[in-house]
Length: 324
Image (tube, rainbow, N blue to C red; front, side, top):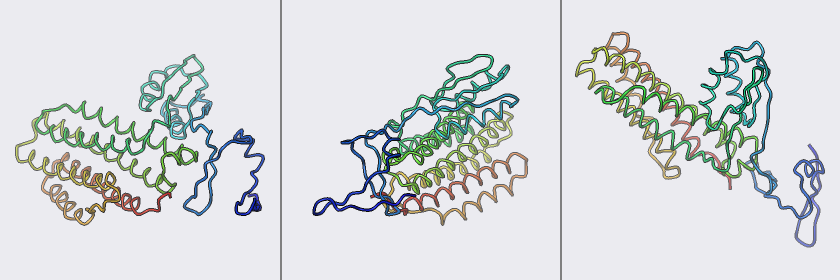
């Protein structure tokens, strides 16, 4: 860390020289402007006003001897870390189709070049068009729809394939949000555009994670219900009981989502209501001993507990220090 002295300039202005290495790195010259903002740590942050947040960052990965699952995990890491061009170097015989299928899980990612020893992937994204608020609202809308259609499965008015597609879209949006947050944490100009502190970005990353888990658990419930409905194992009383259970779970999710959507308006928290509902889920599990019903109860319990965790994060977010 360098130490710099404050210089009195004129009668009332104070100034400080800038490190030459930093000026060179950002290609600054006399007359250029800097954005100055105070952080939550009471320090000042300098951001070149001409700095373009989105910069091309490339990475080459040697995939020799790696399984397709290992490669997908590496691609996920590069996507979340903000790389815009990723080159997979090494023999890829028999792997391209599998990788292409999984790359479509990443919003804005496309395979641009394929040879026997190379796969080049580009991520075409513009951070200036991305809004974390919009992503979270979009995820909330999709999850509400998934809850509704899962209940509709009990009346066989929808198909589980439609629900599965919506579930995949939740995961795609979650990954996009995580990518944007990671980029913002590593790029001051982007964080400044979002008008969010590092602490707020940290909390929102948890909200995204919990949203993804809720979407995942609902899909598991939908698969079970679809299978049991197809085999005619659900009577009218069981359908009614399951409908009540899922509708109440959906209602809790919507209440918690309102805490985020209406920040600063003193929303009423629902933490105190969970214990009673968890007891209802346990009672459902106890009354239904068949293999699939305890499983539905277990996934429902996981959703409720994830919603509870999400609400706690919402409370932290609402009460966290804000950027000035």
